Amino acid sequence: MASFEVLCATMRQTDFSKIKSMNIRTDVVFANQADRLAYEEYEFDGNLARMITTNLRGVGKNRNISLMFAKAEICLLADDDMVYVDDYEQIVLKAFEELPTADIIIFNIVPVSHINKRKPAEITSVKRIRKWNRNPFGGPRIAFRTNSIKKANLWFTILFGGGCTYPSGEDSMWLSDARRSNLKIYAYPECIGSTDYSDSSWFEGYGQKYFFGKGAYYKVYHSRFMLLWALYFALRTTKKAEIGLLKRIACLIDGMKAVELNMSYEEWRAAKYE
Image (spheres, rainbow, N blue to C red):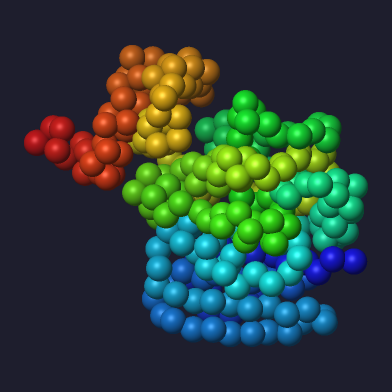
């Protein structure tokens, strides 16, 4: 059986209590954002937990720290609000046995609660994720062969995501980079746990800041057809959006312009309306 560990991005931890609250039953690496520097280990039930605490901010930086410390053959990304089912390790390893060519496998997670209609996309069958498919999958449902990721030199962006200049998109970018590196990605219809969407470090609803961030994302990752992507997204989010269509398009275009100057939403608004 392949070795396995969880790679969890977390914040302000002073102990290993997340092991119990997340129902972790395997080796785990915690990349902990705090105001100190430390490395700690803790053994539990025959497993090893390692916590790397730094004062770095941004989910991408901390996911990268966990990747640098990863040593198992199969790893599972996690946020600290995940609660795993008891047999999550067996589910993940079984999927990789069934899909021997897979480099990355995406699983189902169940929302305990969600806000503003934000909830994870459900996987209903085993399928290959191709270049033309969307990436509506967050990090905490992604498992991978560590050797494949390291060979592809695959890292998370430090520009997008919670605690970064632009609030989201780091997981989609990582998956896009993986496909550009010719890694094989599959979706697998088994649930590995649940998560609480009622509290988010970055999601504030489908308002101006959200569409601004999406505009920045399209500029960086879909620059050739960014206007078409932006128009499609503005239309697709009609039922969710808290602002009108023209305002959505304007915010998307603002994000495209701002990312060229590396300006955040707050900086852009201050410069635009001063």
